Image 1: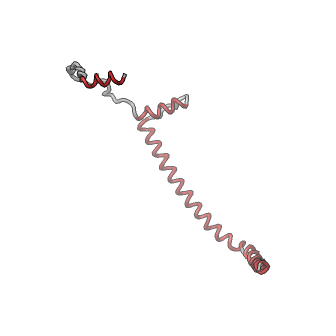
Image 2: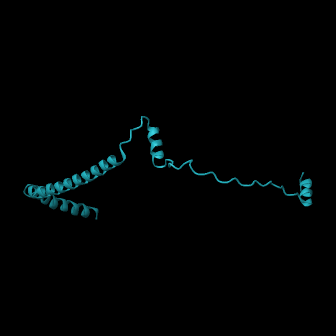
Length: 125
């Protein structure tokens, strides 16, 4: 049974190899037409990427014009600190609010211990 399987596989290889070789000889005829199509697609993608780069560049220049260019910190930890503090900085109103009126402080009256609590504490010792 195993010999028949080997025979079928060898027969399939014998038939498929010449077909593959013949297809490789015909590839030279089809390459120029398919190559032009691939070139056109690459040109379209390149144009699209150029337009996207122009949009991003315009957005960066708009931000620089409105907000100015921040200096780069000299140390990486300073860059991290600046990133956190830049957007969360205190407003101009900090410290300028009026002080609230002082409230009356009440004296704390400690609760009286009950007789049962004293008895329990005596027995637990």
